[in-house]
Image (cartoon, rainbow, N blue to C red; front, side, top):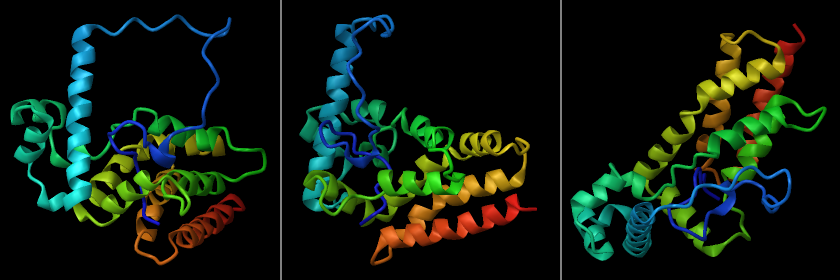
Length: 226
């Protein structure tokens, strides 16, 4: 089961990177209704989605490296200039720039159950958001396999996760009572985000992730006892 990192840019198959389903937004506690999206914004969103859908379909059919940018533009009935306005690099065609990704990552630390360690919370987050379940959605599994089998996509996905290292280190420091600039917080954040990538090549990635976080857990506990 590969490291899925982020969901595809296409619509219904977001896979395990999505957060828990929330309830309806109606009721007194709900905030003000969002401003209606204008026609121009809707058209831009539809164009972006059409490009992403065409790209993923071609990538799944023929392989990422076998498909050119012009082919994708033609399939989406747009110019290459328009394509690059929405997706500045080819890898971005595959991944959704998930604005909630960091929020969910930090919540895993800040909202962990009482008694659960920080490495334990990060382990659970990795297991539920960065692995495709064996019995999961077939379309998402195909997407995950595409990423796992394409070095350029694996690298891009990992870069997207590592963007959150500093924010995660800060959350770890706040939750543990350590100084914001304590290097152990930065180290735990970095290795927690790297561990799922290191596990992707193993026959049993889930077990590999658990073992990697066991190591982080033991080191963290040893530090806490000093």
